[in-house]
Figure 1 (tube, rainbow, N blue to C red):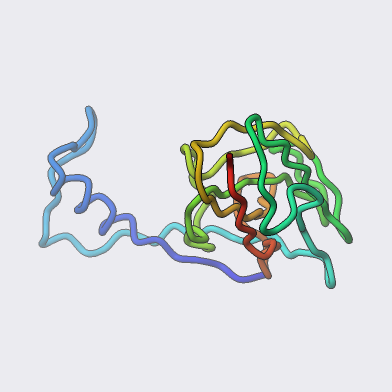
Figure 2: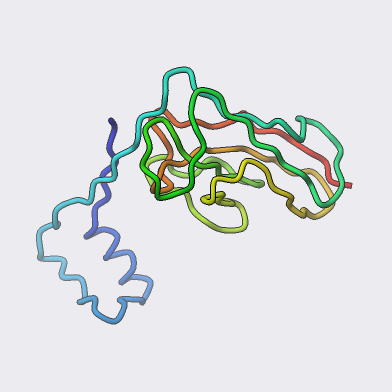
Length: 158
C-alpha cells in the first residue's frame, strides 16, 4: 500500500499566511521543529479492475439533463464509509484534470461525489463542449492504488 505524507506544519503555515488561523490555532513559530507528518494510506484496487462510461459516449451530442451511467468491472460499488475490500464509490470529474491522487478527492462543482453508491445520475451543463472523467474513491474518498480512473470523454451539450 502506498502512502502520501502531508506536512502539517507546512499546511498550518500556509493557512496562517492566508490570515485564517482558526479559533484555536496558535501563530506559527518558525523556530519550532516540524511536527510528525500525517500519513494517508491508499486502498489497493483489484488487479485488472476498470471504470468506464456506459453513457454518454465520447464525442456524443447531448441535451440537458445529461444522463450519465457509470460502469465498473472487477470491483464493487458501495456507499462511502463502508470499508469493504475491492470496493469504492464513483466520483465524476467535470471540466477538470485529475486531482492529487495522494489526497481525498475534492468535493465541488467540478468533483461530484456519489458516496451513496449511485451508479448513474442526471446533470445539467451549460451549452458547449465539456470533458467528463470518472475516478473511484475508497471508503474515505481516497483514490485507490493504482487509481481506478476512466479515460476522459468529451461531450457537446446542445
